[in-house]
Length: 430
Image (cartoon, rainbow, N blue to C red; front, side, top):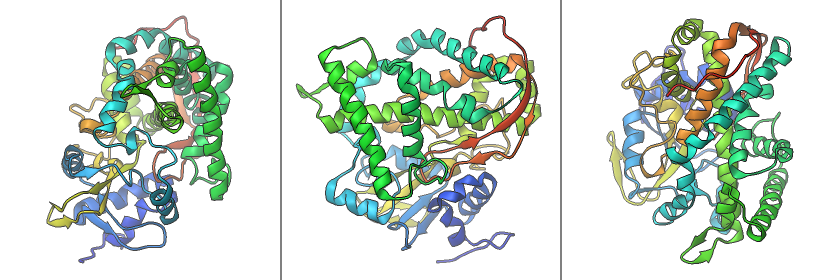
């Protein structure tokens, strides 16, 4: 295999390690430099035998991610939906996935399980939440005022606001929110020394056990006393006339409660970081708030909080001259595809008015994110409240990003700001 080097002397094999090194995602600039090299020189790049994981091909071009996503008849989520260590893959082969959620499923299961909650994420249902989102957005921007002109935007605002939204949909009490926040951060932050519960497999399995305890109790409660929330829909869902099993039900709760807020909080904090670093784009939004829907999609492209999904080929498939054999895996790098120079003009620049914006952060095809519209609404609501009230803003320290392989974004964003006291909340632009 031909190995090329960039101007800094980094070769494609070294660049490929960004996908198997959690700390690489914590250095956003260098990660994207390595991804750009792979797009140019080795867009279907084999990550060969190594100590961390079993081999796979890293897919970094927008068109190639689209091609694989559209061929869900050939490229399946099972058995390897997310990149993991060899030991974890071995356990999964022997015992199955701890959680089997929508991201792990293929047809026909995927379609049947998705249909159970799809009505809750339709426009007609989500529009009913606009007032609640505006109320919560105002609550957290007001909190920034109360904090006296400086805060850690991630820890004080971004991780809380979308959690309150999704748990409101589930119908969970506000008293449970701190518990859910901690569990979610420990689940997605398992590779980050600051966020994980501990460094051992046993520590991580205890996080999983806490999820099972919490959602097992919730299922029993909603089956005994159904309510009109999403938690009751999941608890009382049936498939082929039978109730879902305990593992299936808890897995459904887990994907809604975790993915429903962690990815959105990463986009909100990463989006504000981009606006601070490129103040001309913040000025554009101050001058014309009708650009906010474009800016939201640009934040989603910029952060790409879900870094990848895996697919496994069921038959040989040739991509850019490389044959991916049946049984081999590919990693679809949304973070890399969303900076593809062939699709996004000036791709390394945050453009608040970018249009069209063909970002792939929500996936494509049958696995397109169920909560995509909800995420966009939440982000718009917060910045619709924040931007008209925001005066000067600057970093008050060094931002810190998560070490991760799967989902992540900023974990610290210290800022100083001038923020006006609100006299009310303006409508979210459509």
